[in-house]
Length: 466
Ligand SMILES: [Zn+2]
Image (tube, rainbow, N blue to C red; front, side):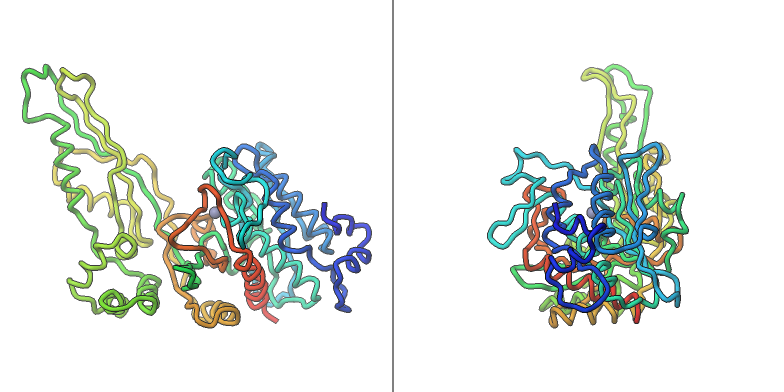
């Protein structure tokens, strides 16, 4: 147990114990590492829920001197284990609040798959191992410490700062905290601006820190079933109407179909800035795309690489297939699942129409298996980018800030869909060639963690305003 846990009763004793020499009125936050250990060692997988972690954090905020009315624990009545915590640092009321969101739940991890116990924080050779350290308990700790430090300093920000630690992001589950808070307690977390480190990215390649992303948007996903049927019959009397062949032809046409290039304000800037990290032809091609004057050859080269192709256009791909009912019967049905990842601004109907036109067979029918929840791109604000650049360059002068559209989804889709501009910003540097989120031996660098704690504090302070 943390030595400051008892600080609710003995604030001054705790202040002395943590060795702070400041003559301010606030209580010092606990060491970041200690808070990370506490969170990692509380199992918050889908089966366990996030309530225990949310309550442990609440105790820490109270121990750090936050008033009980500013530390709100909330759980849905029908899902008491899916608790959320909303903490606020009151501002001077100039402007609407800034909201940080971070999920507390983690993906399941089994001891036998890991080199270490995933639910213990283990330090080894400059790394901290444990489930959730990069996704996203490390960032949760950074947000908590930042808010505690700001309170300790006693400087009231211009805008209120709110941090919501939420349930059930990973499972895409029945009690997603962001959705639930927006539906039932919108007033508690309503904000002018949302920062979600989960949607951000800080990339390292071969030991070199490259960029910190400002994620303004996410591709949304949408899943179609495509199907064709026939009356069937005996396999000794084959016909040209065999649905398996018909579906195979349709899928071959889909495999050859490419959606047109669709750049957004964000992806245009992404290519311009990303070019700074490249050399040779790729650099030239990216610059041309960013400036809007790429020729077909440049588009072809960038489309041949998965990482850049997915930034250029909507993509759809077959993911499952089934058909036929007996080895000696003509099939009566063949069906494929096709999943699309769509650039914000394109409608689900336009995507289906493009696929149907590519298939060009009226006997192949389309249905929606999983409908879309589109969310718009948040405007790429120059002043926000500048604030992020100031915080980044203060710690890493050579790292670039990269506007980004994520190919995957985060909780920001819910806040964006309700008109709250949301940005994924995360400075916990992670190796782009060794992603371990959701996988075995998830880890973060000791130094990377310490620096992210500092970065988060600096950016939060800047966004709060003085
Ligand atoms: Zn996450």
